[in-house]
Image (cartoon, rainbow over all chains, first blue to last red; front, top):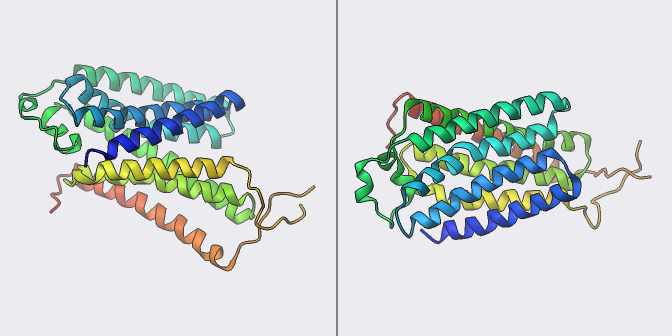
Length: 236
Length: 44
């Protein structure tokens, strides 16, 4: 079980580096914001690696904050910047998300580690133990749910919307396929997170790895010009 | 000047909208799961 977060961390940080490199070349704000979201995703899986070796209260909090609370919302925020033409509106929402993320950070820093931490087992995934180890207020739980729903709608919904537009217009085949893969990849950890809430924590690590791989392949597919196009038709 | 248009194959005519619909359905299902757990439904 515990080798999966190692793979997820390697894939996610490689993906983060690829997106950030593209940001340095292209300067699109969506690429920078995706990099932030992916960094959170990678810190979450890196925390799982560490928590598979030893217990640390700070790492439990980092796992919950970066992996469970804010990474999905920041990934979705990047998609929002890509799709919303009114730059001012997108930046205003980014400002709100930044404020909510700061609030989430303060709440998690202040959250208590319970006495159950003494019986923490490194052989078991953190996803099956965090509810006992980390004391979470109602506000923290509500924020976690809202941020993840926002991230799912913007990231998955945005990618599916783009794929549908490309399919309907019959243009940019590689981007259409890439967006479908990105949507599937973003959905995978969301499904894993929902299973955790439903009392099935064992699938989270696997869905995180599948999600990182699918999103990375989708990103490469969407950003790499095809060597040969399926069919080139003169523009009308 | 050519645009990057493609002519959909027989499979992509139905597979792409099918996949998009399936992924949308999966996303909505995760929301239902979360809502049920919030309202105290016990799974298993």
